[in-house]
Length: 110
Image (cartoon, rainbow, N blue to C red; front, side, top):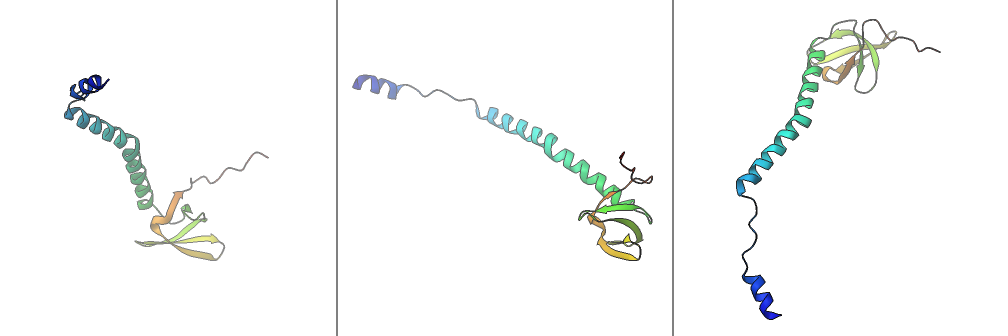
């Protein structure tokens, strides 16, 4: 029994894949991560920035906090939104979540 342990200990270890294969695998995982996570995020960010840059007076918007209103005044960093008749709030321009369509919201079929 002792001799079999010595033979196993003396046997060369199984060689793993070459080191460059590990680097190729790591690079492939990085590319997959780029196309599945980073690229769509960058596209969404560019689309949001384009919406923010294209804001105009009388656009109906939704803020990130959920307020819905009409833009009455635009500055470089702030937007004044009328959320009810004679009720105006100031919001940071970057917190505008979405611009509602010009036609307005269609009523539900009740």
